[in-house]
Image 1 (tube, rainbow, N blue to C red):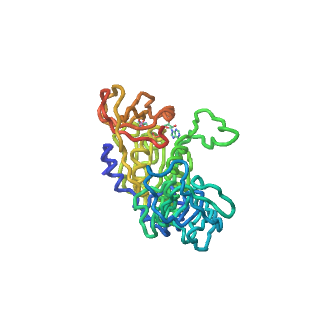
Image 2 (image 1 turned 135 degrees about the vertical axis):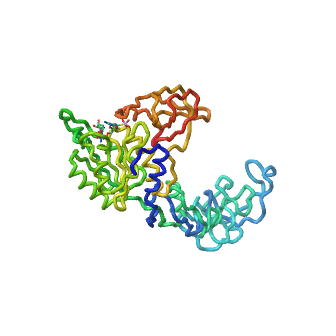
Image 3 (image 1 turned 45 degrees about the vertical axis):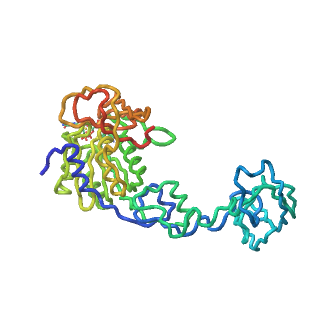
Length: 420
Ligand SMILES: Nc1nc2c(c(=O)[nH]1)N[C@H]1C(S)=C(S)[C@@H](COP(=O)(O)OP(=O)(O)OC[C@H]3O[C@@H](n4cnc5c(N)ncnc54)[C@H](O)[C@@H]3O)O[C@H]1N2
Ligand code: MOO
């Protein structure tokens, strides 16, 4: 049965429509931003050999070092002489075993020659020539050597399922020889923006095309494509259509046949050309959500068409922005294996809020800043559902469930991506 949902009811209902995360195995370098579904297991020891940590000489050190406070300052009167038998740079090896009394000049990152057990940094040497060097500082076995496997061993589990692959993780996997990862597959998405008034194609060197009377530049496609792409979703198609029922129905049916998720904007309220609810009723047989008690963004449809999940958002840019951020994005992230809630954080209001008494949950654009560990929220900015100017100011959304909210109240908050 079609009914009006509260915000929390709509969140529950929409969760049930969420596509289940599917897994795929990809080259590691293609996994940035994906959620790991398998473990990342080290393939090699790191470092793969005993490695010099300083530029200097590899030697066979005999005696443990004296306590630091007993070491001579600025040189050791018991300077020991070594015969230099070779040189090894990072990326090369010195294969011959070293004997006591021999030294190999060694660079940071080079493998320590067999038999050597310490690296003496250059600053602890004097009278160095091609063939000999004196060590003027006591050196203990192990000095300036990072042993093989010190960073991790083959077989170690380095990343557990559930982490979002970061640039640091890519470096970790590269170092440990992990060439592929099993991650959540990105659902495929299609975006259909509707409205006869919309002029698109504003990008390009020549600037925006001229605007005929009564027309506006469409902006919802820019937002949706950007937001979906930023989350790692694959946007198959993003088209703008006039309010032509036959054309919209055809495009929607085609998009549902080839995408996991279809998002539309416009044409969801009560006007003569608001075709989306009727078309979706025909295609799906059941609208899971038809209207939500939120402001902005009450006109909103969620439905299943075959295997595809469809979200029909309002045309008003701020309404579709709020609907996408709080109703759609969290479930798309769940499909990516990424835990997200509509309002995962909270902040303290810097001012009183007095709003018209309505039964809707208000979702306001706001600017939050952190002072002495506290999140402070200013929601004094344009809040009409047709106003995009607030997009230059807002770095979060807040939720208010009462018309009158005094300064100092802690309210649920969602940081927006790219928040400063
Ligand atoms: N009689 C009623 N009228 C309206 C109701 C209602 O309940 N009864 N709801 C109002 C509310 S609330 C909203 S929100 C809007 C939603 O309207 P639609 O989703 O049908 O959207 P449109 O009418 O197509 O467009 C609304 C507005 O937004 C502009 N728009 C549309 N698409 C874009 C785009 N891609 N980029 C920029 N701007 C866009 C469009 O030109 C309109 O100005 O309905 C109220 N009416
Ligand atoms: O719900 Mo509509 O988005 O306020 O104008």
